[in-house]
Amino acid sequence: MEKAFASAAKVIEATYEFPYLAHAALEPLNAVAMKTGDMIEVWGGHQMPDLYQFIVSQVAGTTPDKVKLHVMKTGGGFGRRAVFDADVVAEATAVAKALDWKHPVKVQWTRDNDIKGGRYRPAYVHRVKAGLDASGKLVAWNNHIVGQSILTGTVFESMLVTNGVDLTSVEGASNIPYAVPNMKVELSTMEAGVPVLWWRSVGSTHTAYAVESFLDEVAEAAGKDPVEFRLAMLEKSPRHAAVLKLAAEKAGWGNELAEGRYRGIAIAESFSSVVAQVVEISMPKGGDLKVERVVAAVDCGTVINPDQVKAQVEGGIGFGLGAILQEELTLTAGKVDQENYDAYTPLRINQMPVVEVHIVVTDAAPTGIGEPGVPPIGPALANAVYAATKKRVRVLPFAKGYSA
Amino acid sequence: MITVNINGTVREVDADPDMPLLWAIRDVLAMTGTKFGCGMAQCGACTVHMDGQPIRSCQTAIGDVGAAKITTIEGIGGKVAETVQAVWAELDVPQCGYCQSGQIMSAVALLSENRKPADGDIDAAMSGNLCRCATYHRIRGAIHEAARRLEA
Ligand code: FES
Ligand code: FES
Figure 1 (cartoon, protein in one colour):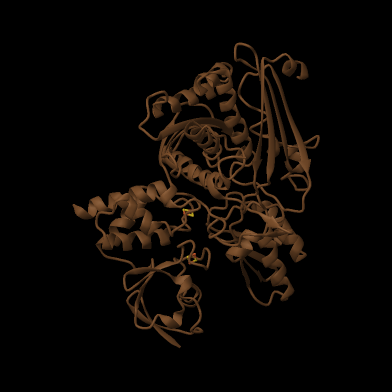
Figure 2 (cartoon, protein in one colour):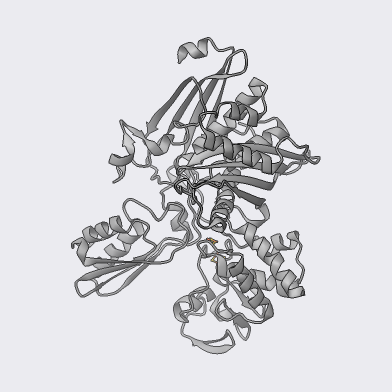
């Protein structure tokens, strides 16, 4: 690795910073608990019912067969309702028990409870370093990730944390599809008192940004077109190559753009699906950035309901875009600074681009689609902004200003 | 007892006059189509009509409603509302659905005033309605489609 960098004709390096993010689901957390006969009944948007049934039985001091969960239709949780200690569910149960089960108890968090109540996408820092040979080929790649572990200390630790490496900290970085002869991905897991949780698309919320926006810098350093540069390294990843080509073709990559319009592209695999996006922005000199259009290509295996695939990618783009542009959860002296949507600001309709989704036709086994629309939007946008401003955005969100 | 005209019926509400209309609708009158998202006029999930105008019911005290006519998602009707609801279903706008009664209330109010809203009008009328699922692309499309059908 060190040798590869030492003999490289060109070495470039960049650091990326990602903030804590809140799920800020529109339906604040809630649950109802009561006892009927010897059964404990709990209503809620239970995303992990088996685990919640067990936790409720522990809190209530009974056995799981005496716990009946009512799994309700629920507002989108984006990860927040799949929580390892069943927080609001356990809370409703504990309160009902403290009242000797005399009353049904409904717990309804307010918006500020929800935003200040923890379980955030962790903050991360990435340092990425690339070495190019004299012909502009990427010969060495080093990505060092620093952040809190989501799964250490949870029931998922034994499944998804190996030798101290939390898979969710490195997914999307440790498995990049590109053929790079020398590659090293490192993780430093930090401890902090901030409770963290998965957030739609999990590790790929940050890894895709670092990898795909840095790759654009590498392509530029190599003097190559970003699509051509990626394709040359995707010979052994035909699925990725096909998705990238489809997005580029449908978006008219390479065609001339109208005055004041710029493009960027990125591709990411998450939940075993591959999504590429071409973002088109307008950015008049001295004016505001507007995301005009996103063309997405998707390979999620066999598709049963194409409209649902499209809807999830449209929504994933809007969800991801809000975070990249303007969402940030900060703490001052250990207290969360934001408490409502005036300060924690998801995307609104006036910021939503036109979205086109193209689906690769395949009879391969179906793969995820709820999350994979999210990861590429950030780096694709960053690459478009670079095309407009010649500035790389390395500190998120964009609202902090476009330079580090 | 506070008397309110809601969805065309006069109802007696046993509540403190300071209670937000939202909670009177949901918890006292047991109509749960109107949603709570922020309690601070930031999300639009609680949107209802007061004399046809969209208002945030989390910001209106039940004691201040007076003789005004309140319409909730359970009570809307007429050509505009029916068209909006039909298009919403056809284009599969909702995802989790939590914000959608508020979205529909705002969209019906917009189309009742402006039969041919441009994108800028949609932004102005709808940007107070958050959708965390970001169904915005389809909301915009559905409003345009409803406008086309209402014209026909
Ligand atoms: S609950 Fe009234 S605007 Fe959010
Ligand atoms: S459809 Fe889920 S919040 Fe709008």
